[in-house]
Image (cartoon, rainbow, N blue to C red; front, side):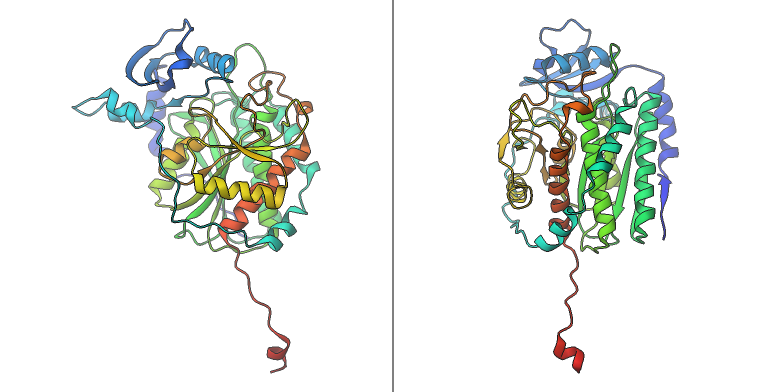
Length: 412
């Protein structure tokens, strides 16, 4: 068994950036206009483009409070501090042009890609082994951290705990084709993202399945974050366990990612995407999993699919996977600007799908509050998402199936 666990070589190169970031509290964000309206916190507007704004701010807490207050109508933001500082070194500075790179892209789905469900035996064999008790244990551990935000000691400990869980899963499987990485969050030294790779065919475009591990930074209350996003973390961990224990070999590599700093503006996913670009790792498809355990007020489980900042063809295929393997009602819904880390992959030009725990845009009313606890969740629904993510991985990574020798060939 060979397990590679390493803090990336470029971490040392980031120390200067980390020190310079620590010396100032100025941050630069791309936010939808609705997050700014009706609020009294201080910010400086640097550029505007339709309903988007590029702003400079010195304290994230008031903005995150606005997200909590308005998230049914107005979603997230992107922290572009590193990108803006790089861009501002240019002689010709055009803030509006910079902002335009973060406007939601309206591009057609990849019409050249034809999806087909073809590995039912392999998928069904794996999902029969889902361990709900293990999911419960992981949720319990994650929600016992008072918070998991980017800058806290508990947030750092949560990332290390996920790394240790992944390391244990790899060791138990005795696979030889795995690697475990900590990817530093650029500009923020405490909480890294965690990534597990399965497979050796790194020149082939990979399948990325991810969830964010952090919670918001609240000054008023604890943040257990059971649904957002411990449920997603547990879903990806259980998916990893099933894939590792299957001993299937795949034509394409699979990357399981637990993103840091999502609630602070998709910081971890930006660093992860930069890692893929820096190492010239091609990507086939991306699945985002955030909240996977809430079934809604009516108690009827269902799955929604985000129809913004996602690929229409891949999203349709995920709907087919839900029908084939999960057997729940499925439908599309709007998610909102920068509602999760998938938007960073989408802006990078990758095919992305984002399944959600309900088709109702208001979703879980306890998110970002101290009441986001395990008792509000359905482990059965988390199990549904493990089925979906496992099917996504197997169907798209394409297991190598060795044909059995026929009786006649054995006789010869």
